[in-house]
Amino acid sequence: MFGVAAVELIARDAKFADVPEVEWFDNLGKSMFTLFQISTFDDWAPLTKNLMNASGGNHGWVAILFVIFIFIVSFVLYSLITAIIIQKAFEVVHKDDEAIGFVNARNRQKEIKGILSFKQNIK
Image (cartoon, rainbow, N blue to C red; front, side, top):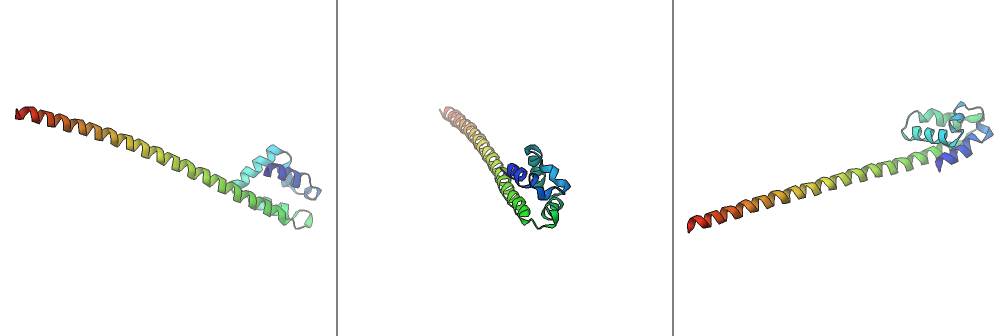
């Protein structure tokens, strides 16, 4: 969605023709790669500044577009990472419960054998 918006709003707009970075939004592939780079906070400030100051105008909507993109991507990414960590933690707990159950069953069997051998020794 943001890739298409960047192609349509930035690459196809004549106001940005004199900005060298506009070629990073020429097509959907380049636009998505550039947005990925922005989502990792890799050198995104100069890109935004150059696009905002294109043709001597103040294009603040470019900054708003990128900030909204960063907020959405970071929220989704952090939520995904948190979900994966929680899922792995539940898997570990489940495996621990199985291991504890196995140890308890083995201990009960030993106790039963001890009681039976004690009972036989009493007779």
